[in-house]
Amino acid sequence: MFYRFLKSKLGILLAITLLALTIYYLARESYKKRLIDKEIALLEAEIASVEGNNKEILSLINYYKTAEYKDRQARSILNLQKEGEFAVALPERQPDDDGSVTGSNDSRSNLEKWWNYFFNARRQ
Image 1 (spheres, rainbow, N blue to C red):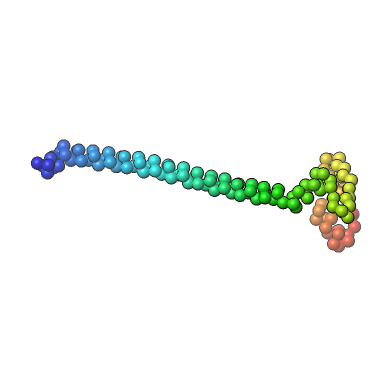
Image 2 (image 1 turned 180 degrees about the vertical axis):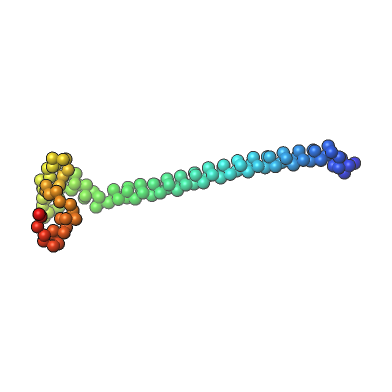
């Protein structure tokens, strides 16, 4: 009897409908799984980035705890110096008319300055 039902048009239609529904649900679940896998990959990349940042921060914290850093900060911010050292204060450079800070008002190109330096040529 069951075999006769499967051979009938209604049985074939029912089997095709069940097959189509099964394929639809499998495709939908496969799509959801793919989306979840992409999200997991993004989160893993973010975790790796955060772990890298944590390592950088920990290395900075360890550096800030060293005597070398404290000595450098004391010298630069507090203007302290060790015994036997002396400080040299250089005057600040004044900006040119155009706002740039240069060593001179020489308008020659850098290439021309090097050429003159090596070949002792005079400016014409």
